[in-house]
Every structure is written in C-alpha cells, then in structure tokens.
Length: 630
Picture 1 (cartoon, rainbow, N blue to C red):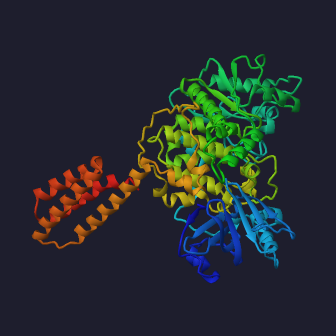
Picture 2: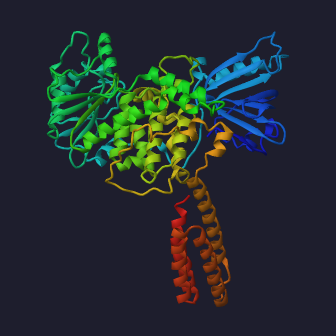
Picture 3: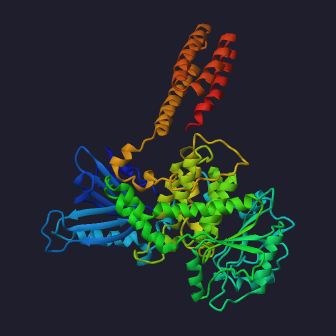
C-alpha cells in the first residue's frame, strides 16, 4: 500500500535499489535511475532534497538527511502530470512538476532549470503513468507475481447460486448470454423467472437500456423474495409500452406471490423524467399496475465527482480546523453517503419483509450496483466474511459491468474525462460506515477496504481492469494477470477483524443519519501525518497491546516446550508458566484468565513427563484465544 512515512535503510544506490527497498515485483523495470537533484515540496515538512526513482509501476522518492521521508506512489494512482514554471521562472522552487493523484494526494517536485532533467522525468512519468495513451500495456499484464492461491477461483457463479438455493421451481439458470450476444455488459450466466422463455428474454432486452434485462441478484431463503437488477425502460417522450417487459415483471412478482412488486429507481424523480428526452424513463403506473415505484434521489456520476473534488480540497494538504464542519458540509459527501445507505436499507427492508424488488438507475451499472450489493451485505451474513465479500464484489460489481476503466481512467491521460466518478469508492465508504456501526458483524477489517481502494488505482492486479466481463475475456485477463484476491488470501491474517462474531441470521440495518455518519479519516486524511498521529483509537491501542502480549506468551510457551524434561524442571516450568499467565491475566483478564485456569489445573494434577506435555498442548489450544487477535 502506498505510504508517506519516515524510513531508514533504503536505496543506498541505484544498484541496491530493488533489494533494499523491497521491490521484488516480477515485471518491474527501472526507468529513471536515481535522479538526485530533486526537491519534494512537502506540505508538512517543507522543501526536502532527495533522490527519485521511476519504474514502470511506481514513483519512489527518498529524502536526504537523518529524518528520512519516503514517497511511494503507484503510477496507476496518478491522474495528472503538469509542468510547473517556465524558463523565466525566478522564484525559489518554482520550476518543476505538479502531480495530481487519485488517492487524495497532490505532489510537487522542484528541479534545476539547467539541463533537461525536468523534460526527461516528465516524459518518462507521463509515458508510464498513462501507458494506454502511449500504446503500452498496463502493469498488471507485465507482472509475474506468484501467490499461494489463485484468486481468480474465488467467484464461481454456479457455486454462488447453489449457495443461495438456486435454481428453484420459480427461478432458472439461463445461458442465453453465453456468447454475450444478448447483452455485452452482462455476465454469461443469468438467473431469470422459470416461466420466461429465451425468446421472452430477447424481447425484453429491446426495451431495456443497453439490453440490461431484469435478472436475479439474490433470493431470500425463507420468504423467497428476490433482489432483481436491470437498467431503465426505454419509454421515451411518447410513453412507449412493451407488453413483453410488463409481463416479465409480472412473472417476477408472481414468483413469491408478492402483492405488489417494488421498483426502486435510484435517481431523483426529475432526472428520471429528464431521461425520457434521450429515450429512457421509468415504469409508469398505467403500464405496471402491480408495481410500486420509489425514487431514491441518489445523484448521478457528475455530482459525485464534484463532491469528491471538494472533499479533496478540504482534506489535503491541510485541514482547516476553524471551519472544518462547515467545509465538510459544503462538500455534500456525507449527504450522498447517507442517500446511498438509506436506499439500500429500504431495499433490504422490503426483501426481509417478503416483498420482491427491482432496482435500477439509468444503465444499471453505477447506483444499481451500490444498492444491490449494500442490501445484500445487510441481508446475507456470508457477504460479511472475508471471502464472501470478495464474491460480492466479483458478482455485483465486476461481472455485472460496473465501468471500472471509465470511472477510474486506468492508464489514460485524459484526466478531465466526464465518465470518471468515485462510485466504487462511495460504496466502500458505505461499507466502512457499516463496519463502524456493527464492529463485530464483519470478518474483515478496515485494512482490507483500504487495500482494495489502493489497488483499484494501482493497476498491479487485473481484478478491476476493463468495463465488463466480455472485454476481460477477449483480453484473456485471467490468464495474463494476477487477481487481487491472490494477494489477500495468501495472507488472510492481515485482514481479519479480531472482534468478529458470526451471526448467520442477523439482518443489519445501519442508521443512515447525519448524526451517525463519519468522515473516513483513516482513508481520506491518511497522508497528513499530524492527523494520522491523532487517529489511533483506544480499540486500536488495545489491539496492539494484545498483539504484543500474544507474542510474549508464544515465546514463553516455546521456552517451556524446549526446556529440560526432568521432574524438577516440570515443577519449575509449571510455576513459571503460572506466574507468566497471572501476568497475562492482569493485562487481558477475559482471555488470559481462562488460559491460566486451564493450564494451572493440568500442570498441578499430574507430574510425569507425558502429562506435562499434555498440559502444554492444552495451553497451546487455549492460546488460540490469543491467536485470533492476529
């Protein structure tokens, strides 16, 4: 994960570069070999002279002197590179480069005007930060990283449908889109009403934007209510009707005898009406008589992009304390988070009460994905596990065609592209809000969410590349790149929430109130070292203390296991073990006291070697109560 931190013992020379910095990514190539005369204009520490390296994956800066500051920026996180100053610039540090990042940072480097250093660095940085604009491959296609697990096997559609209890007598699996001819932005395997024929599906596709027909995302195992996703109907200004589409939605309603089908249109009413002018629209009461239409008032990608831009302005580089609350309010970021969460709660509540729902926005790949995935997270505890969450992202976001390439701009120099928008970031923010309100309900921790966002930009993995499954297949993505889940699942301990408690039937209803929502400071303001130092919560501090205590106990246990096997040693070791466990109990009573009681009983009941070893084995079992902390 990219970082801005003090660090020593790195990059003694260009020849030691890969080894000392720990850059062992296979496929990484050094493009600028340690240019020395460069100054990083740090907003927190002032002008810092140092050395810069640029590879085909990252920009790396290390300052000179005793207080070392390190910048580590994946090139995929760079949105814009501009030259600062000209030949006539005379001010101090007024000649150099300005770099705008997608991860809330802006970087400024000053260079000497003599020679061609700025030109050389600019050209190399511009070329490798935006490879697709220069006929080059994204780094994910060059990387040859190896992991213990193949993350591309995380999501298997048929297995996930079977887990949900599908197919049923009301719902069937369709392979009509196997060659992407029905809808080129949908996955190949779809779940549709049992009574709907393949011919019906093709007719409905003509009346839905981008041919994104209503298909099942999730089914409630008890009441059989479903979440169905799609795009807007092509009603237009003339108010066109389509009998096939109307009958198809009636089949969805009948599947669990829902009195009325609820259609959640994510857009504000006025936007949905405006879409009629371009051939879109919404389901009218006359045509869909057994349906209730609800508008959720979530704004479009352009509004979200501007909101994030305002948020970035107030969090980086400096946070203005005097007007912080009013400045945050002016961004409307938390208001948008509230509306997305509120919409998902309404979806989850309807389904939980036995009513089937249809969810759409305009094209069904932005706000629709936010709503369906968040509602499924609330309803289904499986998606709140580490691997279940990966399945949720693969299913609702990646396979159903959220336009990651367009929204993020991977490898593209056109930073002003109007298709860019933080829709997925907004979703992850909503997930974070839920983890704050339900700290024991999620198996994964905040670190996972941040790693996902960092690699959303980095282009190190193939997971978030391209706009849809058909394009990924044509580019052989799974064969030529590594999945992010390969990294995550090869070191799951880094992403586990130590306070997780499994509750399989619990439905989560977060409070979508401005009083209960928070700015995700750990993510949005993480580059400010002053803010970061203030953010260590009591829970985090306790977590670190327990980690240290666990390590101490492991060490002591190893010493006992390796000690002399004589009877006197057994008594000595038992006493030492009891003394240590009493110490542990003092620091972590709920956990260590159980360990102490169990070990104390066994070590003093028996004295021979076999029983002492048995005691240590039992102690080791009880140690698992500490091990989960990791």
